[in-house]
Length: 562
Image (cartoon, rainbow, N blue to C red; front, side, top):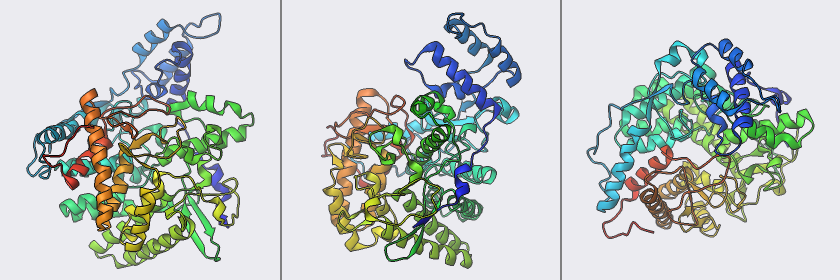
């Protein structure tokens, strides 16, 4: 059975007057300009030139068309130009002090001249993606949805013009290859500052993201920097924030207790946003999606599940749908996800490691016990002995039910790349016999395609489904395989990395940019689907290419073309 606090259903972070007003503007803009090339996020990112009350009053006074009460395109454009700065104007370009055009010891295993030249171009993109929050945001925070941060940031790119939580892990992996340790550390300290203010790392540094987090990888970022620099002061500075973040993820809204078939209790965790309204950055879309629900409480529950899918980073996927591919059956808060619990296992192991490094024996003991318990829970609830992979577990009814009995039929039997994410964690990649089984399962899963690992096997039109491949998934699976020490596993990891590097290279050569996702069915093609156009830049794609090239290199005689 599973228990969760009934109060967990009613946790809602209040919005702000600025965000609420910008949502009104977003809705008006959709009515006026229409759906073609419309990005709702643009409107909630606009900084105000004047006070909110002045701007709101001017908006109320706009002349409306008598036929349907809308504002003409000319009038609305004039109003936006007069009362707002451009989206992204509250971030200024920043040249990182530790950027060097060709760092000493950079990618010594890359022998192919074309690949090396391209890798240096990818490395140079850190300058394009580096920003600093404008002083205006610090001086007049009430005019901006952007949140002030103490240090410069590296953004993903395009419409993602602010810092994001889980993206930052792969950005940091790339920065470490680029020998940009100070920039990497600055990113971590920004995320720590969010924990100190809000109690958790926000999805991104915007007012409208204060209602949810994202996959919890901060401890892994700190671990990678510490491994690279030995900076024990960073560990000391960050450990209290990590303890606070761990408490957030194990609070009532995220924690579920499962009693397994043998009668043993296990604490596991789920995504659950503190929100039951349309996401401000996609408000017009969410309202349309919820229009088929007539009941207010059904709409609120659906909105919470949409925001919780955004918290997962997998927004959106059939993984969260009770009846795929029907988007209206999204039920993220009823899923106990394999990958989230793997990340939390990693956090518990890292916290014990950091505590040991600074001599805090009590914390070491506590977190070793927690990680042992979570490993048992992951094996008991998620592991499928027949499929040799870990499967998400569905709670059989609404998230506020007091009890759920564990049954094999509630495991999600569909294949997702996330089913293999636990292999990224030491307790699993260090188990030789387990690794052999998982390698076989991955090879025969259908996920390994011509140009990388597919996110799922279902072509739903959602972006976290087939045929899209995402840099983080390629990296986690390949790195887990490498860390196992198995020769067979390393060969599979290298095969995945070669496909991914090749596809990124050819796509870059065709388009001149790095993309956030690729089509794994076609080498050199970028991905699609979802609620916005494919974005470029792109933080985590750059980081994973650099990390793969550092690990595997590229011999002079290996072709880089598809």
